[in-house]
Length: 117
Ligand SMILES: [Zn+2]
Image (cartoon, rainbow, N blue to C red; front, side):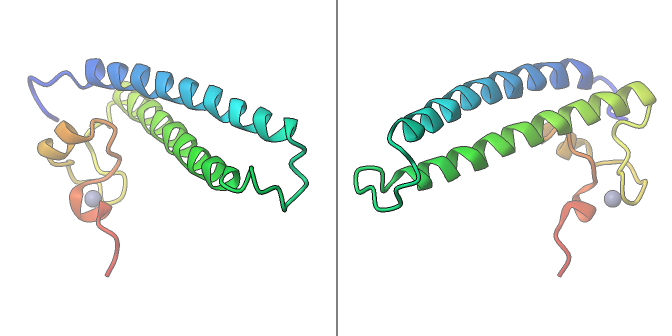
């Protein structure tokens, strides 16, 4: 565990941040969807709307990331409550304090987070 640090405070702040980001993105996503629907989106040859599917995919991906980080923060808060915060979920070794510093919601240690190969 990282003595002296305040993981809960940081996670709560991070959660509020991710939640706000998700809300803003969702509103934007709905706006874009509404905009597309107004234009009768089943016309694939709509020249004016040519960039829309791309924008929509970008937004969808960004929104998904926001949802994922929110879920990660929630999971980290759950681990904090369970007393397993700061322990790698894969190998059971302590997660590096520097990593928790950079990513309070980190689920695994640096070596487990590294993609294989
Ligand atoms: Zn690990």
